Length: 404
Image (tube, rainbow, N blue to C red; front, side, top):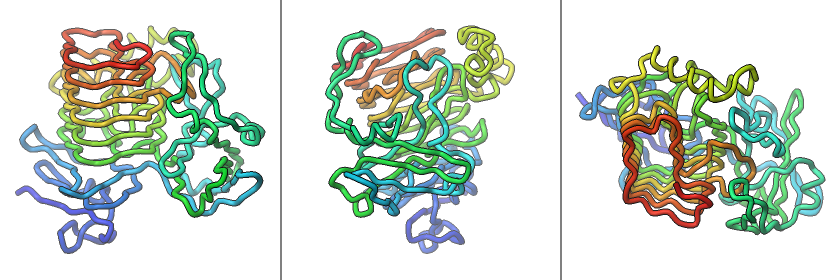
């Protein structure tokens, strides 16, 4: 028997998911839903990492998570902060205990991994948002005192001058100091009062992704999903996106609005047991060698059509992400990516490397990429090693530094 569960901001932690007694969080539903069930999420902002524990059985017996028709439902990896203290000339600070972040602190964790170009200043996975606008990270507190509008900078790929999409945004900056007990975040709000406006900070690594592999046949439909501290996702790492199936089969990700992932919005890539940034950590082999080894390790754990891939990603709007709109190595096989609108990917130019693109795939075997609109990205589509039987057609590219 298929069950319909309800999640609402009026729900409780002891709710049973019925219309009269809904769950308070999507994760409550994610712990009990089984093949064939549907989770309707009602109007509101849900600040959580949704991690399904059960899989669907096939395309006809999947588990569906979707916004209730007509309701705006947002899943955020951020938390709202209302305890800012004014210091000087539009600069404010907030100090948070490490317990606020748990075992993952984005203001301590760097953007790090294979094929990341490290000659640029080190950046962190944290971010600050004023009424939804993402800030730039400063290297020092003094840089906040001297913040100014920057209109352009050299482009890494063409070596030509790149003009910022929104130059006024560049003067909004944050800087963090992490001690043994707490994290202090400083930010330039100018004439805005952060305790009266909506100010949010990155807290969670992802918004919708199972912690276990093999959680197959999940549908994610109709949400706004944003503001996650997703890490750098080269083909030799545990590729964690703001949303992703984590080495599973048959997901459908459709009709969503996804934005402000620190690195990647959607990951249909590999998992950690086949290697995780060994080149950067060990420095004993080239990244290319570790990438080859990842392929053989993936074969050992069952990398084949029957166990992974065959995802559908369609009708999504994806924008304002630091590295990728959609990324994947190995786990992207036999997938279809269609009718997505992808823009402003890697347009802040805070960090760069060789794994950036509106869509960036390794091993896109028999993948179909069609009818997508991709613009104002550092790179449009980048299909790397093991591109085989891949069909790219009907896509529209414009104002990218490089299209395909």
